[in-house]
Length: 343
Image 1 (cartoon, rainbow, N blue to C red):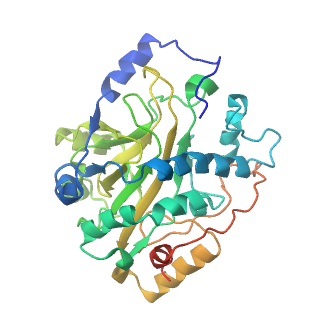
Image 2: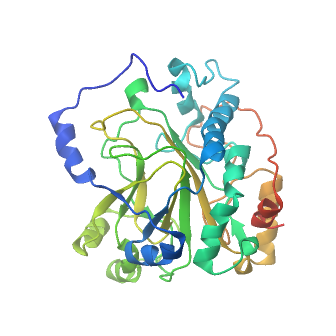
């Protein structure tokens, strides 16, 4: 993959350096499969290396370019992986926070399904939930992609955190583990997942402290609520992981995606595909049918497989601009993939 260009941004202001003091702690949470539940319980996060490697990792790295080149093929300047001058067109797809794409059926692209239905991924979730992989269902989730701002001049971290939880405070029990597979190494300074370590342990406490009554799974925290976690010793940690790792976190863990820091040593891409699996037995017949319809019609969903929310195919963030994007091709599912879908 071409990672060099004449457009290298090197200047870093003193204000930027001061602001980064609180964001520079990167940490690895690598563990073995047998230790994943203990790691999640202790820290709220766990990382299992080498879930995909070799040809599967290469297919992920090339598959994302195949997908983006197709999605931008109707644009005046389509993305060309070999031409960094075209990479700015990625933003014409309106990714959230410059990285997150939950529209255009991208979660049903073949390269994402190939990861989702990889037995090594479902084996991890089966271990967490003490069931067989064939007894799981999966989210039809998003991907996050980010090209180096050293090349585009766009997309640096700018103190734009959006810390949230993905588990309703009215349900304090352990019930969902989210994850992503990373296609590239996540080094210090790179775009990554940032968490408040151990924050999952205080889900009930903060509900009581702030009288939170919302039963929405997605809840963005304000500064006062974040201070509550910090006073409990929940420090901000940015996740390090090697390419092919499966990064997991308890949905009660306070987290958000973070763009790269200007102080990092070298340019890097971000590519992660989000994965979440829970036992099929938690699904009603109605929900199973909703899931089957979503796969058939190539709709994406929120993270929780047994409480899915259907996302629109077209982003609704700009009333005066709708990207002209071709339809996604229908993916080929394995028998495991069909089971994970709800068939």
